[in-house]
Image (cartoon, rainbow over all chains, first blue to last red; front, side):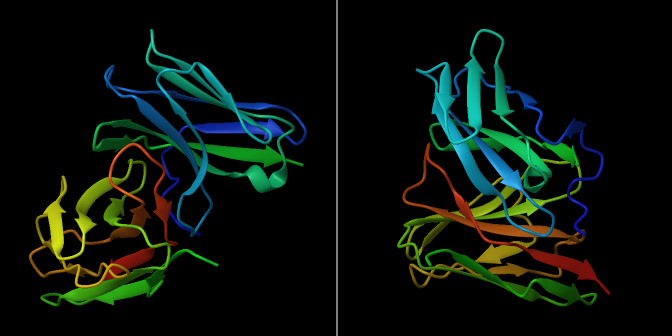
Length: 110
Length: 113
């Protein structure tokens, strides 16, 4: 498989449990945030986004929370499934500048 | 289905050789990007293009070159000047440049022979 997930923080959860993946961002002026999912050997896939005028946004089985006070972003995955196993990373954007985090590897135990 | 196609999936480069990575999109997006992904690091921007016949250097452009002769195509050449080219290369596109999702291809893994 691809080695992009090496040396990343790892989260291991039981199938059916909820997962929470965290991201600390660097720029207090960032006004747009995205979570991506990257499976082994594939390109990143968009999961959910949020703008800085919101604190929470929900999608299908996923919720993103934004805490601008402490520059923290989290991704919650409800009822985690084996197909959720992947590397998850956040991205922050200010204007035309986007910075991508290195990511967290999520393992789902059956 | 609309999407981004990168080819080849695996590529090997010999010393002193230039290699070109292909990226084609049929999403009708104006903006296209090339990123490099190394183990344990976030994506780093190599080049981007906001419109046909225009492109700009990103954060790590040295040793790379691009062209944007057609809206659909944004090939990346890794030149012999790039001394550490082994990486996973990702092409992306978005409607416009700015705060919006980027759509990614499935990458090209470049290795040195």
